[in-house]
Length: 335
Image 1 (cartoon, rainbow, N blue to C red):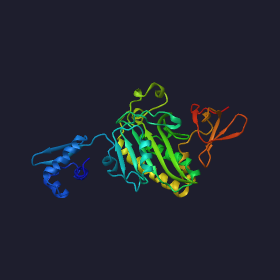
Image 2: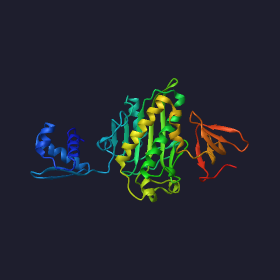
Image 3: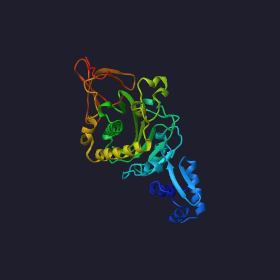
Image 4: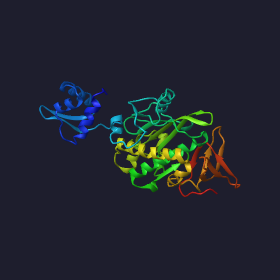
């Protein structure tokens, strides 16, 4: 978007539905009325519905369903997260782009947001279904001052933040669950995945790239066959569309609060918020660990460092640092 168009958009928002004259806009921006018209046309090309009549001025009638920086940042109540947004119509992976930006010195809190991904990535090399213009795909550059050993709990903190916002949107916290280590379930089906990649500096974290995907408005019937049984979206669950930009604003506010608390006081300080959505304890699980090892047993609470504790049939407890977890139906206990 050209430099003046965001200022025109801001002025139209602030008019609260009333028409703004071209002359008043020109005076406020310090440009000609012809330049104001060019800015308005630039906004229209991006999907903004702006009504205009000769002598009547311009009025913002509707905004597009796009996660433009101007839409995310309109009323965004964060201090550092999302104050800089890189918007992409399409990319292979927001994590890849954010990683490149991080290595080039991008600031703490830069958010890369894409409308669609051609090669979205999940944990363990899995693909993340990323159709355009319906969901949230974002990767955030973080430069936390934390020890390397504390990094795994950033994923759990992020899961708790996503779960809180999903629960607020659907109005039913009991329907929302954090599945260790990186999924958020809605009605027992996956609606969000988190992918964290980091660069270490000795025993400290150099930077993190925190990738978050949330299925917001995708029709569940459009999921590929291999995902359909286990995935859902907020819209499919609610029977209505979700305001994507408003959801992102709430998520960024909640996530910033969660990450600040994590950096200042550690995972223990936010543990009650995580535990509100953790319902795996006592359920039978099968864990496929990297390298092909399979572990069956009863899930316990995650340890303070984020590892999942699993009690095997012989009573021994194993700590799992990474793996893919298959849950028994809710209420199913290990035997």
